[in-house]
Image (cartoon, rainbow, N blue to C red):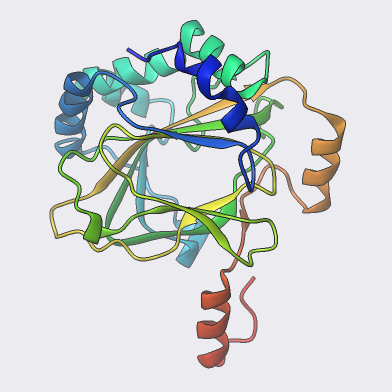
Length: 257
């Protein structure tokens, strides 16, 4: 489904991108299959919710949220499950290796933290760096692949993915979650991203995306040292935008994190 010839054409753009290696690719897979997946997830009922993140994650749901939940996907969303398997296939791993220059990629068949994400109206996800070390397998998380399936998405609904520079002084990229748009980026504790602005879509509409994470058994020592300096590599590292800092201080809330 993916045009694998793209990797050789855009790998330099990817690897030299600022503030960290990333790329946006439109018309990523077969649109007919993706539309069927979108129809499936709109009727899907078995979503999980992580309440431990508090106000950092609002109205955000995901599946699978436990091993048994994978059976729900198999039964109720066969097209979506097919796409998940495809994006973890060896052909896609080879494509990502050529694109990113990272070899030895390993898919996580448990979809820990990934799989399919759903954001309901009013939802938001604070800017953060993802966990860089899988707490169950011991693998290093190296690449995220996000694929949006929002057929008919309107620009004014928001839900844009923001990429920030390491000191949180500037939002470098503001990416709309349009149908069949893929965003691929490297993962370190400096790969800051999120959609901190509340989702403005109508009631009954949600923002859906596939979220695939790719790992290796090791990574460059300088990246390990970088990640360790920021604390627990198995946890999300939350950040605050300058606007959020001003709003918090204006509200008299001195401590945020």
